[in-house]
Image 1 (cartoon, rainbow, N blue to C red):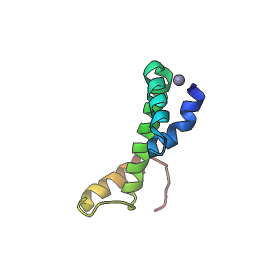
Image 2 (image 1 turned 120 degrees about the horizontal axis):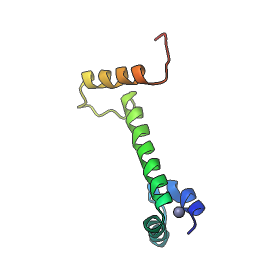
Image 3 (image 1 turned 135 degrees about the vertical axis):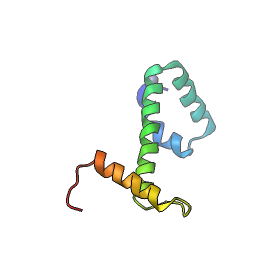
Length: 87
Ligand SMILES: [Zn+2]
């Protein structure tokens, strides 16, 4: 597997839809290629952040998350983030 192929496979790898032999190839490449390891790590971090941000906006928030925590996350996003004014 080449670096380019690995990057194209990232989504499928995360979704778990690849056959085991492809996943094995993927993981072997990751072990020998620091560049792709870095890329993979960044990709996963981005996914985690994206999911967290989505949750904080009210889709997928579990019932037991305290309202105050949600408010705090939203406030932090407004303070640090998109610079959207006027809400
Ligand atoms: Zn690579």
